[in-house]
Image (cartoon, rainbow, N blue to C red):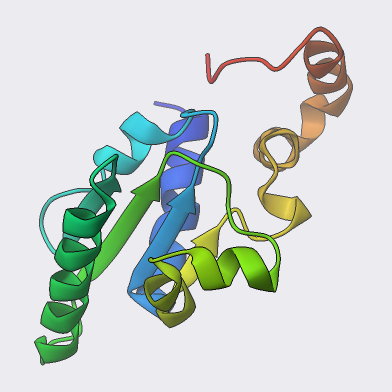
Length: 142
């Protein structure tokens, strides 16, 4: 069975979690929502930040405390935000989840995490076909 784009992205996120234990995924388009939710289970807890910011922040801080108490260092926390990533200092100051993001890794984190760039990294031998796809609009995972 060949590796899918979802497998590629999941592996990328899991690599970040092995070094940081906390991953904040910002996804305004909602493209990665199901994939992020699928990380939940085992040693990884996924919290989707919805409209109830106060409860979500309390849950995230509790999960972060639990990570700190985990003597095995095997646990991980993923925070999924269906909004754009804060870009400047003022936006980070207004983000109630900034402490969690600063304690771990953030996705997307730079041009290499742009959707088009990720697709090109996944299929480097098909760059021209991908260029054509993106010229017609943003393609789905399929």
